[in-house]
Length: 97
Image (cartoon, rainbow, N blue to C red; front, side):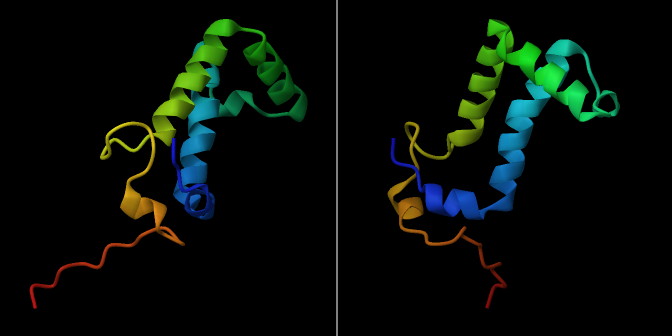
């Protein structure tokens, strides 16, 4: 599984994906909303309950796996082209010139 971790770590969108991949399955399982997380103690309690529950752990693992894979490539790793990037790739719009 070849993944260009250096580039992914530099990409803020990837961090947002990972945060959502972990937090959202936990909130959904326990039927919570963002507004329910008002103290550090409540967040700690939810996280403790989450790691003690195999269904939640499997849901988070599957969610993270889905966020890691690139659906435009075969297999799990990045394409050979993506492995050569030093920073996240930005498409240049085609202006038709």
